[in-house]
Length: 394
Image 1 (spheres, helix red, strand yellow):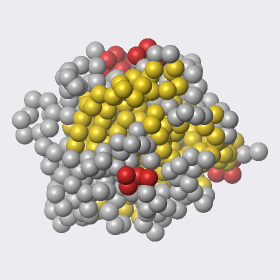
Image 2: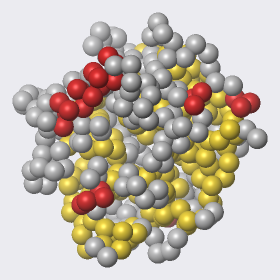
Image 3: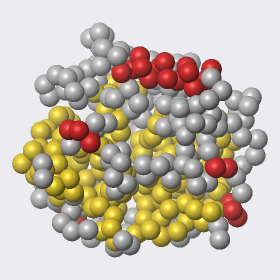
């Protein structure tokens, strides 16, 4: 039912001159890139420990939540954060996340239930003390919406991780109300276990679960592989190496998936809102649009709409389509960045449907994530502890 309602809304958005967001038709196309000189990134808060995500609860409170890889979720307050933390799972996650050495393990994802204002449910993705992926549900305390009840944990999913890297970890609820979960290919290099192209494995995939049904979860009736015994029923999309941040365009429902490359190429994949799922994004047959494993290029593979080589960066960080109101000229433009160079790119489609990607700005930051507030304004998260907001240049 939820998916049907969303499809109807999308059709109305396309066919009607008035759109659902702020009384205006969402901008879908551009004929030129944005002018970088017209914008700046302004520090909003700092002092975080290895922040890797900023998100909001969608409950009208306006709160911003910062996920720290070392196990705590902080609520932004002033130019820092409030204590105690919103959630603290530092005692049950992989100890590597708190080490002085860099690790891909730890607390990696956070998503608020679409009905969070009513049910108080939050979902997290972390690597446990053995380094394996856990997706769990928590509930906020009845008398304190700024703190999660640590005794409310319910484990929904556990996936063994054969290596320490490529854990994925991003969580997001789609416009259909289902929970989407990103899992990397299991790590090492080159996908030695063949998870990306193994449709029975959960690794190297994006999963789609109904967290409001089943025990501990249900499989949506329209998941693409629900009735195929050769395929994992949780799978929504496959052929991914290490999807590091994906997002739904809040105006159209389109899905953007940034996938970290191997040695040479980083990529962003696009899934339209009316997709039935089941896309194979190519890893490890392909690295972006380039053959990787030596296998023939399959006609069924879905290749990225944009990519960049490692002379431009080393590890992609996915972002969002801008749908705020403070910067109207950016409406409909997708922003993403690179972890090691601090580059940010903008991507858009022209009216012919062709994609264009241009460098937007570069800064001395380790871009671990982007984020949105409730109004759709865009944020950048610096792994060194800083949260910044995109604003008009002064």
